[in-house]
Length: 78
Image (cartoon, rainbow, N blue to C red; front, side):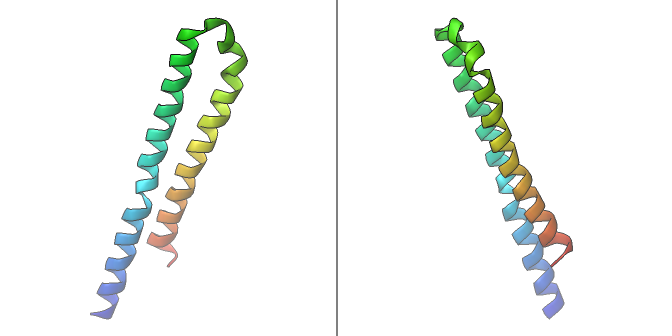
């Protein structure tokens, strides 16, 4: 009985940690849409902001990867 409760908690924790992946997807979509809206308003400034776009996407994806790592750790290491 006690082992089943620990397994249930492990799976619930991993599922909750996986919500970070959804947040990363929403964040990347928000960053890309904001860049596109700004580029359409001022096309001359878009090339100078492309590096900022990629840095923002990288940070958002890194948070998603970290949450995925936590979910895997909860599933298999705890």
